[in-house]
Length: 126
Image (cartoon, rainbow, N blue to C red; front, top):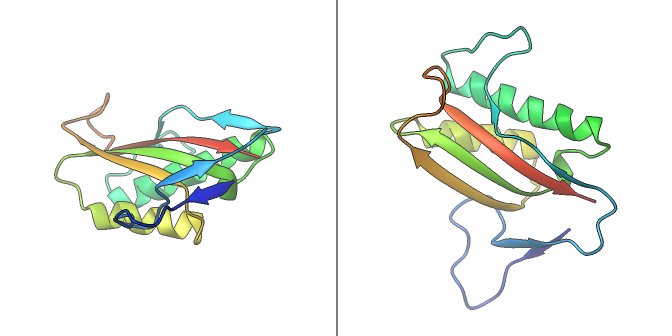
C-alpha cells in the first residue's frame, strides 16, 4: 500500500492518509460494518469499550483472511451524534499503532440498534 499525500493540498485532519494506492493485490478483504459487540454477545455501554471490540473484531476478521490491521487501505467509521469523537480516534490510534490509511468518519443520528454507538467497515489489501 502506498499512502497518497500530495503537496499543495491541506493535510489530513487527523491520523489518516488522504488516499491509498494498491496495485495488483494478492488478497483483498472488505469487512461488513462491525459494531461494538463483545465476544460473549453483550454490548457495553461505554464507547471506548465498544471501539476496542470493533477494532479487535476487525483484526480477527482480517487475520482469518491472512491479513492484519496494518493492511487496511481504507475504513469508514459511523458514530452516533453526541459521542465523544476523541474516544473514537484514541481507539483507532491504539489499534492501528501508527498505520495510516484512507479514512472517513460520518456522524449519524442512530444505528440499527440503540445500544450500538459506533460502527466501522474496513477494506484491507496485500
